[in-house]
Length: 143
Image 1 (spheres, rainbow, N blue to C red):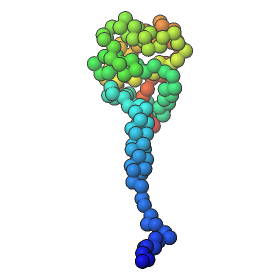
Image 2 (spheres, helix red, strand yellow; image 1 turned 135 degrees about the vertical axis):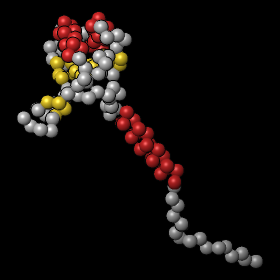
Image 3 (spheres, rainbow, N blue to C red; image 1 turned 180 degrees about the vertical axis):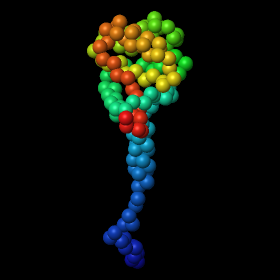
């Protein structure tokens, strides 16, 4: 008695491995979620004053000091627990450590009082900071 076995085809049907595809998509999703975290977004909304010159902003290693319309201070997006110069001084010292060579980047609301801006400049100068950048937006009409 002879048994006839079925012949196998030389070419097997191609198989698409979806598990690897899902792994790659999830890895891309994690990568994009991690990289968007490093994009700087400001949480303190201020209306910057306008100036005729184009704004120059280089925040390589600077300390960002924000003054809102009510005169509250924020150092690197962290609220300073007081509006007096001593509280600002302590916050700047904590943010800078021993490094006084980095610039102070001042983001002051256009409606902030002149006194609060001068206070930031005075405290930064007294602590030994030599570089100060004041952020503005460019006005539409060129004088």
